[in-house]
Image 1: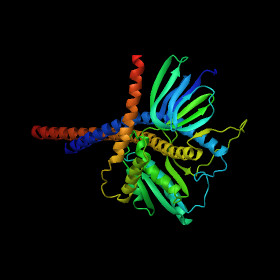
Image 2 (image 1 turned 120 degrees about the vertical axis):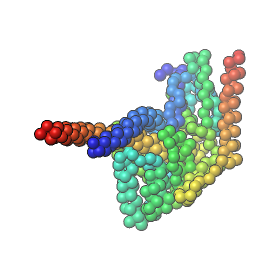
Image 3 (image 1 turned 180 degrees about the horizontal axis):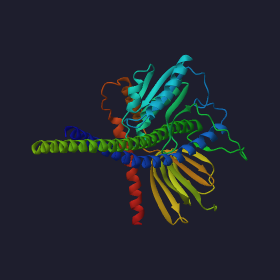
Length: 289
Length: 143
């Protein structure tokens, strides 16, 4: 009977694990929906601000703003958005691979690389990589506020403004749908103005208060903030859906394992009974004989 | 869209706050109070933290919202407010930026407290602006 008991202990432990993975799957599913809502809620702001910047850049060609101009690239900044926790499949690994490839490429070209890390996973990973880490934020939680990002955005933004950076990328996971997330690297600065296909009917310009330059620099700062916020929220939605899928797979595997173990348990139990019966019958026959 | 109304959209980076057509908008611009009626010239201004008043239904109804600063864009047919999600002060931003830097510097060590005077000052500014919005609402309801 010892073998059967061993198996039943094992079954119980796998059942326990399965309960946990099921629960995590459910939690991730509900968090994902909320994260998705936040992701969509952030879009109108980013679109509007882009529109205004586009107009400003068009109607004031005389001031080549620092943030719209391409410079020779000597120093590159990367904002890398990762998760705080694991158990979300290959989400972070794929992201870091993409970031690392690009970092190595720039380093080969002789550019300095500065990193700005979000999330504990990035902290743990990039600690081992050569490259200056200029800002770090962890434990943003599931509901990050734009407020939580001011610090790191300011570090990178000011570095760019003081020409300590010539190019700024943001690396995060793009949420395509529940089943698919894709690592994505985007250029944040300098801003590439969208090509407007339709020409303006007539020339117009805003009245600026206090003046165009100040408004523009505020707009740009808010723009970068909203870009980073959006990346963070999108990464959270990706994290939750990746976790949901990973946990679903784990639950399915656990179910499979339990079924197999149950079969083994029944076989062992049956074998034990048969053996016992054989012993009894053997014993009885010996007495009769 | 008729000529007597403006489309107003108030959005923050974290989500939409208000959307609808109104007759007039009153708010605090960086260089003074603003009243915007339909057909206003294009205007782009920074906002001070404070109430935004919206007159709807022919000026009979009034809605008051509170924004903690941001940017106001006016087009002849509509108004967009890109609201900040919190009151911003330059020195507070500085403090937070410093924290992020420091955190990077001692990635392995524990981080410290940075709640300072600037945090308190910005909290106070926000509270004051909120109080003024509340006062305004109270006064209006009495009349």
